[in-house]
Image 1 (cartoon, helix red, strand yellow):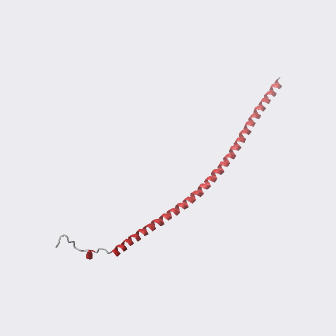
Image 2 (cartoon, helix red, strand yellow):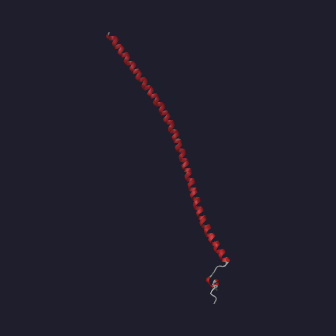
Image 3 (tube, helix red, strand yellow):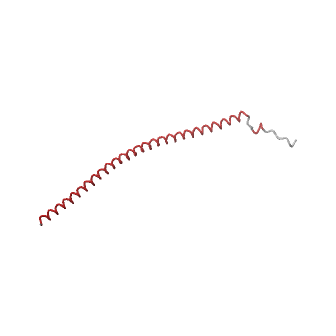
Length: 112
């Protein structure tokens, strides 16, 4: 037997024919396609969940902004009231001081 001779074992070792190789490759592609389809479905679910969460957060932000605007108006009104109360207190103090001065003048004029 020639030492360079390699025994032909294709028939009994089961070497695939080109059609079998193509079918196997097709099954691999189908499995990969199925796995990618599952991943895509999960990703779409995740995106849909994120869109819903984003909508909810936008609504909460809008409500918070309206609350801030309302509270800002209330704060401005209260600051105006506080300023008016401070003016009234100052006027009362001025009137009290004037009243005290007039009482002193009257007592001084009665003593004389």
